[in-house]
Length: 254
Ligand SMILES: [Mg+2]
Image 1 (cartoon, rainbow, N blue to C red):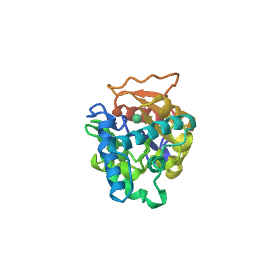
Image 2 (cartoon, rainbow, N blue to C red; image 1 turned 180 degrees about the vertical axis):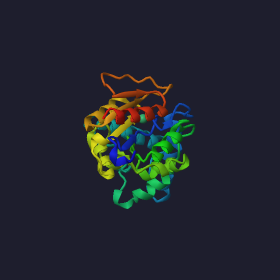
Image 3 (tube, helix red, strand yellow; image 1 turned 90 degrees about the vertical axis):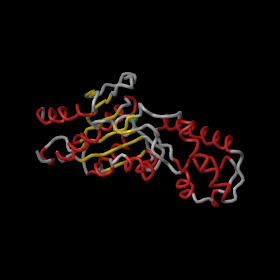
Image 4 (cartoon, rainbow, N blue to C red; image 1 turned 90 degrees about the horizontal axis):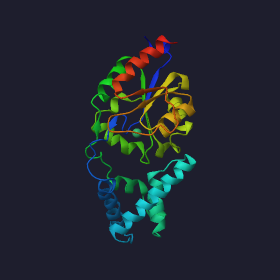
């Protein structure tokens, strides 16, 4: 069936633990991020800025991220990586106008998380959706700009499948704020009624999709057991392939 004749024309996904399987992550968050934070320290010191030791710098960076995300959960405004870097430098009394923050972000040298890979059915499902002429989007609550997360999409060969990809860091708001979903819909020139959203977190993915008026699908992979906390998804799946019969049923029920 051609896209214009269907009710659902776009399938939007969360990224982490929806398209990417984090169950095999190797190392703690601190262990994974610390070499990148050290890269920032190296960049700033090599450009003549006076910093405390790497441990103290990493502590300041971590505390600013923790505070920023706590604030974001209250306000639904996003955490932005560049802002975190600016706040870290400001805290240390560095002259912000002397720092090229794009260069700092490049020096951070973002990389895919060790042990994280697409689920076995991620690419087959995206391939099938593409064959069926669905638009495909991705919305992630990530402070990183999309050009950094693109490094992962490239590595996992996911890039060609997406018509739109949005990080909350770029958008200015986080899920469950309906504004971030609306941004994706606007870019696809679609209405909420034409979209389906798939994500693993009831409190932001599913609650947000409902806030935006989008049909919601909760993905519950075997390694996760998230509390619904009163949120009621329209559908629940344990494998991404289960999306395909749901899409078929939504057309039959029109
Ligand atoms: Mg997720």
